[in-house]
Amino acid sequence: MGSPPLSPHDSVAYLNGEFISLREARLPIWDLGIVTAATVTEAIRTFRGQPYRLERHLGRLEASLQGIGIRPCESIDQIGHLVGELARFNGGPAGVGRELVINVFITAGESEVHSAGLAVHPGRPTVCVSSRPLDDRSCAAQYAQGLALSVPSVRHIPAAIIDPHIKYRSRLHWYLADQESRRIDPGSEALLLDLDGYVTETSRGNIFGVFQNELKTPSAATTLAGVSQEVVLELAGPLGLRASRSNMTVEEIASADEILLSSTTACLVPVTRLNQAPVGSGKPGPIWRRLIDAWSASVGVDIVQQALSAQ
Image 1 (cartoon, rainbow, N blue to C red):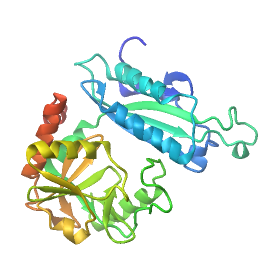
Image 2: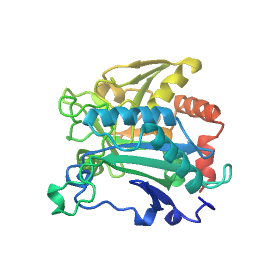
Image 3: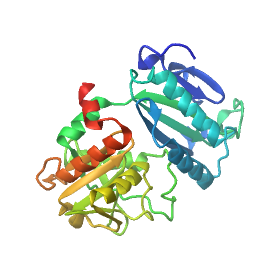
C-alpha cells in the first residue's frame, strides 16, 4: 500500500470491497445502520503495531452477526486480514509507528424502502474497517487519576430485549445515561444497573470489585463478555488473586477496596470515585498496579509508560 500516512487524516479505510481515504468513507442515509441502528461492531487495539487478541475479537464478531442474522460477503477470516492490513498501513513501520484502535462495523445494508429507489445493493450488508490513533492522553490521565463513575436512573437493556452477548452499535441508552451521570458528577461516566438493581457495565467496558485478594465481576448472563475482561481473569490466578462472576449491588461494590474497569483501549484503569464518593483511598490501588504490570509483561510493552511517554 505504500508509505505510512503522515497524519490520521491520511489514513485509509475499507468500505464494501474498496480501500479508500478515511475522509471519503461515507454511508448513505438510507443504510440500515443509520435508519434502524442494525449494526454490530468490534474494536481492536494494537501492541507494537500488532492487533491484540484478534481471533477472540473475530469470534465475538461472528457470534454477534449470527445473533442478528447478518451474513456479509466477507468471511471472518477476510475481515481479520483487513484488520491486519489497516494496522500495517495506518500504524506505520513496526516499532516506530503509533498504536491504533481498529474499528469494524457491519450493518444490515441499504434499505430499498428508505432510499427512494437509490439503493445500489439493497440487502447486501455494509462492511467497514477503519482505524484511529490510540488516545494516549486520555489513557495517561486515567492511569494517573482514575475514572469517576455515577449510577444514573437509566437501566441496562435486559437480555429479554437484546442478547447481551451481541456487541451492537445502538448507543442511545448509553448517551442518555452518560448525560445524566455528568449532571450527577461532572466528568463521570455511567455505571448501569439491571432491572433487579445489580451492577452491569459501563459504555467502555467491564467492571471489577476488589475485595482483599478477590476480584468480582458481574455475571456473563447480564453483560457483554469482554476480551479485556478475560485477560484480567487470566492474569488474576498467577498473582494469587481469586476471581469470580457474581451479582453485586451498588452498596457492595462501593465497599470494595478498589474498583477496576477493563476496556479495549486503556486495558485496565482504576475507578477512584463512585457516586461522588472516593473508592478506597481515592487513588489508584496496589491490585490495579499489579494487574497492569502483569499485563504489560505479557505483551512486552509498559502500557502505562507508553501512554505517558506519548504526551
